[in-house]
Length: 323
Ligand code: UDP
Ligand code: MG
Image 1 (cartoon, helix red, strand yellow):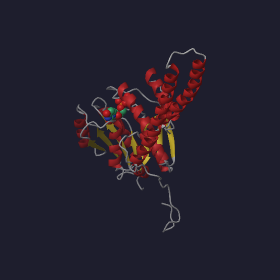
Image 2 (cartoon, protein in one colour; image 1 turned 180 degrees about the vertical axis):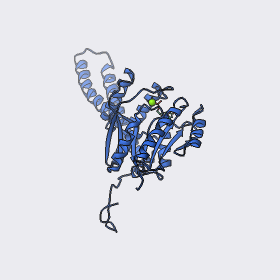
Image 3 (tube, helix red, strand yellow; image 1 turned 60 degrees about the vertical axis):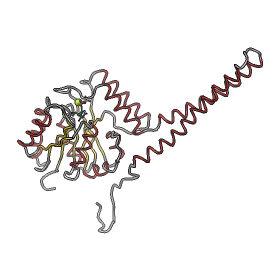
Image 4 (cartoon, helix red, strand yellow; image 1 turned 30 degrees about the horizontal axis):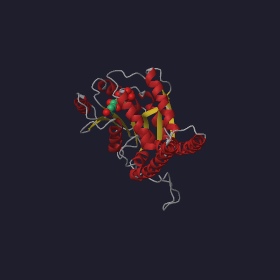
């Protein structure tokens, strides 16, 4: 790498006409600076991915790409959603670059830590997570729901980085490993830690979106969270089994209670047998659903065909060199 790292910055854009001119201006300035410092090479690019926008986003990307060789664009045929647009962009550039950074179009994430991310890459890190220091600029609602979300994910056994969204650097080989995950339900911030290469974090303060509106209304946020959990965890299924076991235990207690009541003569005709059956059948049904769920959970894992392992390095292979 004579002239610095070949860096690709991938920016998903959905109806972002209000922010693109400013975003591209600031990013180009940063690119100039990094090129002057020989941190990144002349072949580095900013790639805007138009996620089926309905406004002038694509026209703007087009004219930006004509004016600046550093800027390139990809247009998706329809609105595939943030995660898919991001993944599509990363997969398109993965063979061209040394490393790629993903970042939102609205500059809420501080682009000034990009040089730091690239430096960590040169030190041998394959993944550099951008982590928010504080969330002052987010609304109270967004802050609390976000914290609840991270807590819940951990509870469900999903390994995600706290306060990290999709602002991160990935090396070419980390992107290659990510490409081995053929699943359709993309929850990138859960998938990247599964890649497992050496990683580190950089910290920054999150700004407010400087123009335009959030493309993540509550409905989308909830479905995103639900997607994250159901794509990574079969804990909800296990909860059904656990509930079934609890109800079965209650059914034994209820059976004893019903029998005692019957023997004491406190019951009407049929009450004891009804009481026992309702609890028992309820418990058996829940347990059965949980059992079927276990198999569905297994099927789900198989269907995703995730890689069983990812190789980090070889030593003493053929030419005796580490690769
Ligand atoms: N985005 C996208 N497709 C969508 C929704 C959003 O590509 O269907 C992009 C959007 O243009 C932005 C990023 O995803 O670059 C994050 O969206 P936003 O800033 O609105 O989310 P928030 O920061 O409010 O969570
Ligand atoms: Mg945003």
